[in-house]
Length: 67
Image 1 (cartoon, helix red, strand yellow):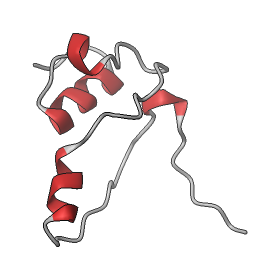
Image 2 (tube, helix red, strand yellow):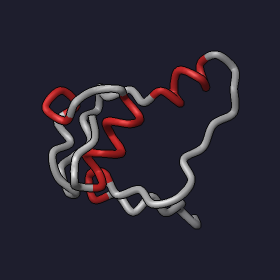
Image 3 (cartoon, one colour):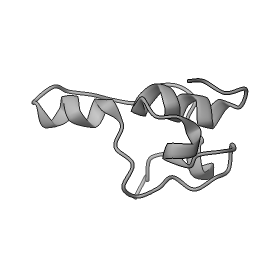
Image 4 (cartoon, helix red, strand yellow):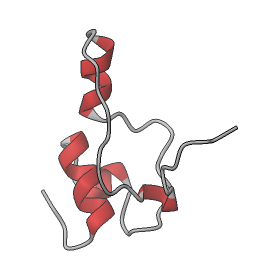
């Protein structure tokens, strides 16, 4: 289920889908707005979740706003 590239591999691990299904096929492909990661299901069930570590799907640095 994993691929040699970071973002498609992480998207596969977090969704359970192959890269041709979740469409994150390289490290700068945009994240589909309808893509659901398994931690989102945990959050809906009342668990507290967070993404920690490297994340650059869709070229999103993931930095928080300081405004």
